[in-house]
Length: 296
Image 1 (cartoon, rainbow, N blue to C red):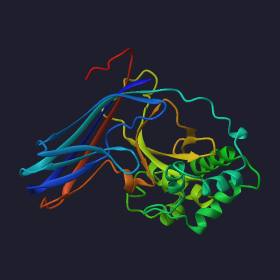
Image 2 (tube, rainbow, N blue to C red):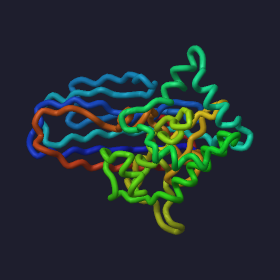
Image 3 (cartoon, rainbow, N blue to C red):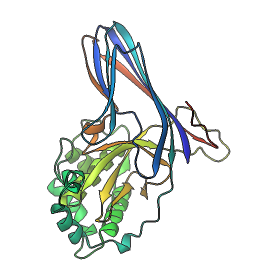
Image 4 (spheres, rainbow, N blue to C red):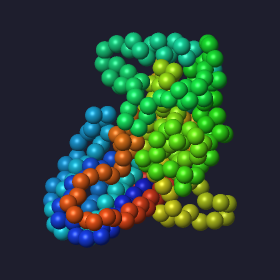
């Protein structure tokens, strides 16, 4: 599936900001099954300094500095990517979860950095006793790792209610567990923490999810949103799991970045001088395309 995506982040400040510095995770990540045809980042007012590099996790990241007074800052990313339909995943054919746990703890050489680092606690994901207790029924002895992962994803979807008013980016997982309510970020953090609690490497993935309008209704431009899901290692590779929607990620999912949690891959973060508060507006549009439209 070929997509054209546009993501605009707008900050309206209470007073003029003379200087601001930002780190932006809004470029699509090339990976197996996802081809990036082009990407463009624009900033208004213009950035005096802009650099594009790869972060520690291999994600494209942009650093920018705006060095003129501004009351409004617009950061817009545009891209075209192709996402392939992944091959079928046979959860029953995966090794027992204990074997995956033991292999992950002893991965040798160059593969260790890519796998082992997603076993440990991170700033926003620290496995709690109540999380491990909740996940335990999905991990009986000898169960195939893929079956355990998919079952845990299904249970989170069934037991937790999507509620955008229930949490913020700072809500701790203990509160999410108690309320049984949250958003995709919370559910991805929960699944990451529960899997890591059983020795399964799990990484937090940020990106976009293609949404479909009701039958007979036009697609609403700008009505899409950022999304988050989990990529879990099952011994023979990674499988992407979306607890928010109880489905394996497929060609409807566009990957921007992955890390240990949201803090590693937040779309825009930065430091400003002045400003006296701000109002944030985000608009995302994910448009499926027919045919080749690669030239930017």
